[in-house]
Image (tube, rainbow, N blue to C red; front, side, top):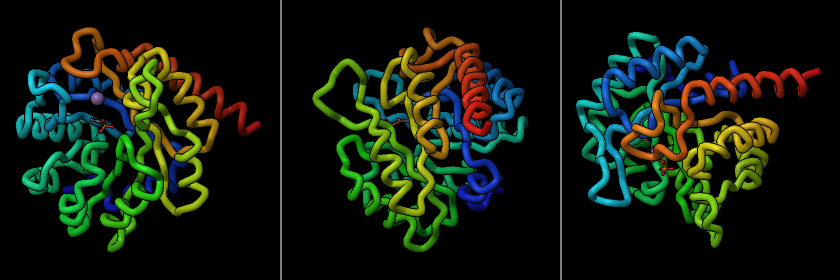
Length: 255
Ligand code: PEP
Ligand code: MN
């Protein structure tokens, strides 16, 4: 049973939603610790990849089905909403049955057969921007999923530019442009946009200050031991620091 029917209802209740969790689901112990931490901090969503699309075939490829079941069970224990990436049409059934919000990653934004299949499900979708997609292409990809329903949120995760000091270039202006020129809620993923844990807090505050609708952030109990994307992951105390700063900024903006 899905914990939510339409993801955009959550954005009506709470204008800024935070999704956090590991890049990849690794062990039950880490996942449990992360879920418990999120629950204690009133975060509603947990993310975690089971099917990982890694640049190198030698890198950890994810736990697959086992990971999906782990995420489902641990999240249920803490009543968290699950977000996990689909990488192929063959994963539709398991995702539909066990995951609350299906994430379409940057590498699949152009996978139109997958988007068409997803549009047949009555399922919340987060659609990331392709790493070299124009805003127009991103919005058209969203139409593949949302021409039947409006159960979709867009996520800016950085684009490829000539700059190499960050993993990608966070295109915050385009995210705000999309909000101003469409009806979509847009969230920001500073983790994949920067690839650098030192930049997550400043970019998250910039996203909040710009009026974006939320964040997707990679966190891990011990980022140094993470099997993927350790360099961009926040540990729990850094994530708590971010929450505190967001809270202060919210108070500042509303007074
Ligand atoms: C992810 O969010 O797990 C992910 C792989 O991100 P992206 O598709 O943006 O690279
Ligand atoms: Mn990652």
